[in-house]
Image (cartoon, rainbow, N blue to C red; front, top):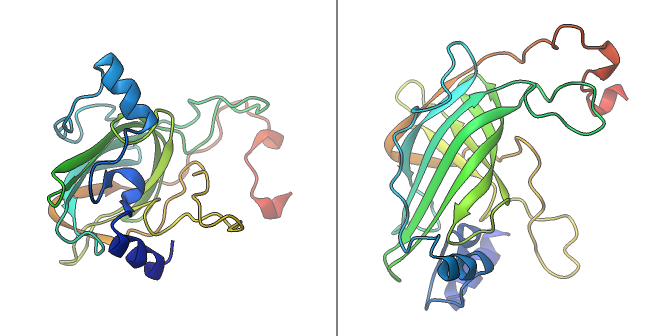
Length: 239
């Protein structure tokens, strides 16, 4: 979605900030997941507390992202948007059908928590998601996670998050795969989101204003012992 489109929608009072993590304007009809939660009592009315990062899945030496903080999102300057990330690499632990390897070198585990409070409406959108992919490069990481529970998004929905640990006095930064990115190439019927692939996330465009994150970089791991060379994941240009 372009900035112009986002501003137009905002002026009309119908924009869904963060692609549904919190809605601006009068409360809309309950989403599918909200309706299911209301019926079962499984979805609380307010966001669950942000867990302290780094409480699980810690493994010395592996790639890792840990931290929690509030971000400054330029199109929602009055809103309170928080991310909590506890993710670590777990290479070759998610087997894929038809692939000889026991998974991918970027397989990962952990938890991402997101909350977005809109003072103008008093509404808070939140999601808790399970990390499935993590890759690092220096002080920057991208990861993806699938929604476990949420009051705004269906379980199983995957999203991407990027994290940059600030250096030399610069702030940490967060990016996310909704809101202003990830528009599908086919816009025949208007803009719509593309499915998010593993470890796909934009550059970290939003500064962290409270809290912080750490990124521990490691190189991609070698193939498991005994793996056939032909089973190695190939880049598109090697095929």
